[in-house]
Image (tube, rainbow over the protein chains, first blue to last red):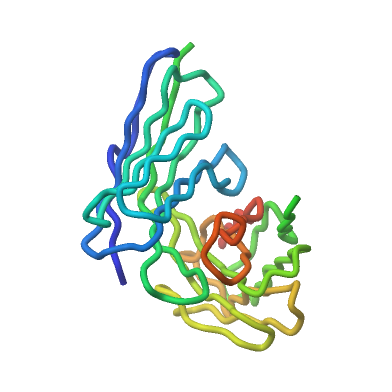
Length: 112
Length: 115
């Protein structure tokens, strides 16, 4: 199947720092999504991107849909302890039924 | 709010047992999905269903089967559990179509251990 490469695999930062993570694909996607998974819970959708070049914010989170449609990034500004968790990117190509391909995840640890 | 529930949060089974994982959604979603999550591998799609009694293989269907007899319920079945099926299993559902409110909503997951 399609492959998504997400980096970095893990990050250890101090509270207040900004965070950046990205995903690249060998294939073109029509939709990019970013999910966050808190410990012991299922992933929750943070941001959805539907157009190449689109830049979307959700509070301290900003994500962009790459112009080539093969990449996306997520930035978190002024991190706080509750930002801890696993962040996943996901892409959807031309398939029907909403089938997604997920990245490997970025484990974020925030030290107070 | 959309709610996706899974029958168990934690499950311990023995090798060779038949295992049923149940997922129920309350938003009348057409699509339902089963994933497994393993460290460093992200979420991998096992099976999905786009309508009652309809099912499609995902990327890793071997050793699994599914059942969707009612729109709100999607079951994952391990016919003969093996230790390499120890994992976190996540169920998700969505409407059809491309829009923010049609994206996948996840249940809390079932952590399955096969001894």
